[in-house]
Length: 163
Image 1 (spheres, rainbow, N blue to C red):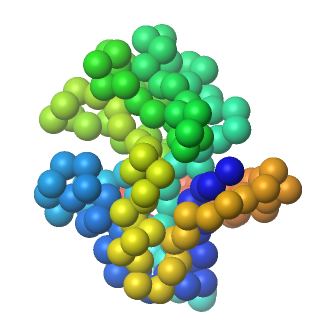
Image 2: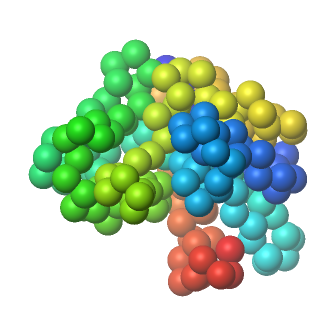
């Protein structure tokens, strides 16, 4: 199975991933509508990390959706939001423990990383290879879970102004 792998130690905070994502989905360079976020943490040591949907093995977003608008793409294993079924209730945004689902005010629907149908543009544009789309085994899931816990702790109690 292929998934996005994030390597914070390689990230330089250029935010090209955000621009590539917004352009590939909306044909505009606008980080506020990107499905990947490049956050900076001003702790010691200062570091950057790109964060996108983890395509959870047990996706709470998919389970809670009253309109059944979220489904797993069997080919890419990405959780996909069917915009035609989405009723704009934002339940999926609340259910995601990592905040990786966006509500698009302009469209009135939720949206998230769909792995660009198996060809992630954020990966192609990343100059330092801090984002990679590679095969992982189920043995890698504990490592992904550990990384997500680290990111969750770093975000805990911080406002968007502090990131």
